Image 1 (cartoon, helix red, strand yellow):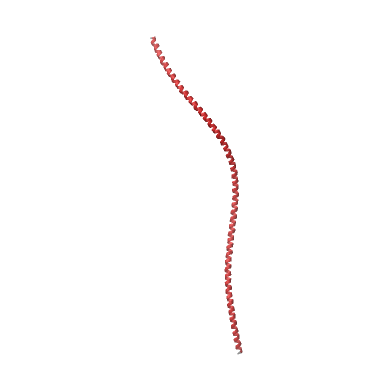
Image 2 (tube, rainbow, N blue to C red):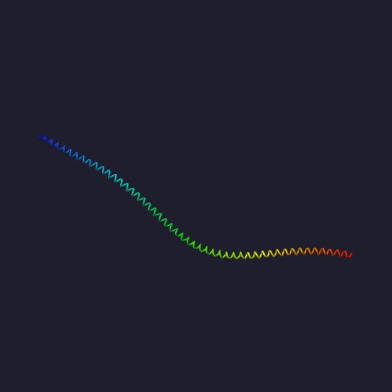
Length: 174
């Protein structure tokens, strides 16, 4: 009997231990499941953070490329600006030279214009003299014609009179 009582106590103790260990196992299992959930959550967070890091690196690369492109553009524009400034300086120099040439040509034109006006007046004067001489020549021709007509008329009259005299002489001689 003592053995049975010992055995019962042992069984009772073992059942108590089993319950205790069952509860501990349940708690440990719950903790394990909770830890698994936290691991999953942390892994998801880690994945999201890695995604963000990858996105950040992508953006950084993009920004670096943009920066390089902007730097390249700035260098190009800077070079173009220098070239343009050189061209502008050259154009200003050429403009000054051309302006000087224009002034010289204006003076030359003014001088030639005065000479042309003087030549024009001289030409008009000569034209007037020519017209006067033409008129005089025309008057002289008219006068000459009139004189020739008078001479011809007088010659005809002389001839007529000479014939009459001849006729009268011939009659007188008969």
